[in-house]
Length: 243
Image (cartoon, rainbow, N blue to C red; front, side, top):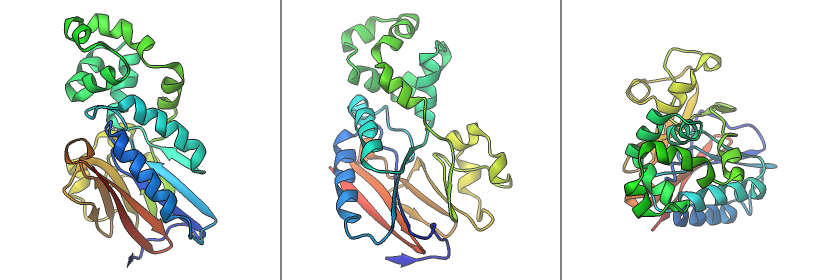
């Protein structure tokens, strides 16, 4: 268990889980691991943060969203960040046809089928027909949950963002598009004014554990490995659910 200069708030343990992308099996495994890991914790507060991209690509987006909703009652405090995949789905739910097209290209077909859309009907349907069917396909409770995602969480020296932050901009001036979509400009930066950014969005073979950033998207939908980081005081350690 390594020790770092970055500090979580005193008396608090934070768990952050990377991009799930429809892998209900791995999320269920991970939540079970977190429950065991925190049993002997001295911290007064156990905080859970899902870093976004719960949906798409993997086979069970519907079950993942349902499990995340349950976790919001199981872990307190609970947060989840809106990823770029949720952004596309929410725009599509609002009738944005270009966003629906982008959503499907990014792996949204698996999400729609997990919500009960017949694969044959999907192949036959036009974008306009899918757009009309979409609001009835996603249950209202799931839509409400998906619309309640956050973009940025700050706890002590740690900043949690789905994709990362824009280097050179103060935290208070970060743009939503960057928080959900940024990649190269963020990854190539060497420091963030003493902060450590915890993010997903960009797949790496193993968790990235640096002084200034922690990346925990290990490509669950294709590798069968879902990663999480635990932060307490100046300590950090990693957990993994593996298929």
